[in-house]
Length: 412
Image (cartoon, helix red, strand yellow):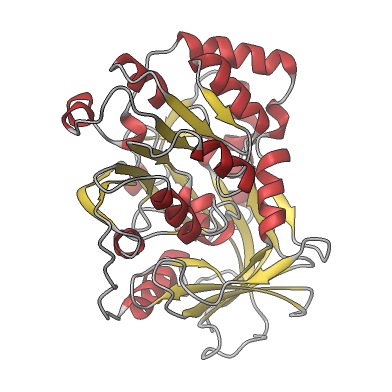
């Protein structure tokens, strides 16, 4: 039947559970933001006995996966301005983090470029560079070490923007990148020789708008460096249930998006579950080739990873997933014995990990998982039961995930 009900989401230390209520405004994204192809529903969340619905779609042309029904743009932008990491806004915490990051060495790793590769681009040291989503990465510090003294950044999170500005001595605009206020600030120093961003595009309301605006701030011959999660390594639970990741981009998705906005990819690399590209603006816009086949492959992958291709001895079970801390790999574990898995989960995530004796523990979860260190903050899960009936037809939605009461998703 490819349907089950989630009775409870099990959130790790840094995550919370958001109930989707009528107070959250929603709108519809019917087309892929990367090539405008129609999205095909492959999974539907249903709450309150089928009265509430959120569809997840896939683009047959490029393999993009994302919410068809999603919170409205203003809600998303306000979330990043006021809620994202809200517990870290205290003055003492900001001061401590500012000192911590000011003392760290710079690193280009988030955008997967070496110092030599950056210097070989031949960007004048007199030109401005721009970071989209300053967060807490150390790229601006690394670029400053290479002699690039004119760096701007943008981050809608006010306390993150403040930390970056104070720690790295750069101007950070505390606004969404696509806002008119932010764009007006950028135009004062455009065109930018290099625009870079790490793990931001999947969080934005409209990735297509982000790339179009980036292109408008650069001349032909300028560069754009992006890093984002590799959809082929992300666990199904994160792709489906982690609300801030509104978009899961495939390499083809980003290629189509960049080429349609006048960029040519000159480097592409995959490492530790991430995908990074370096693109050069040529001004030549290319139409995406007509391809297909991603719907069936995506559906087959999710059915297998969610465990819908198996028969279980118990109607109640635990679906949980986590990342390996040392090499970025990920695994999903289905537990058939109930309620022992739930007790295991609480033992690991609520007791052992919270004591902070170690941030990583090696423990065995069967032969497949033996001796692989699991980062304590990445264990997530869902207590589920078999669905008694479906509210959608298999043709309308091949996979159906029901919730007791309101639909619930992870956030942080």
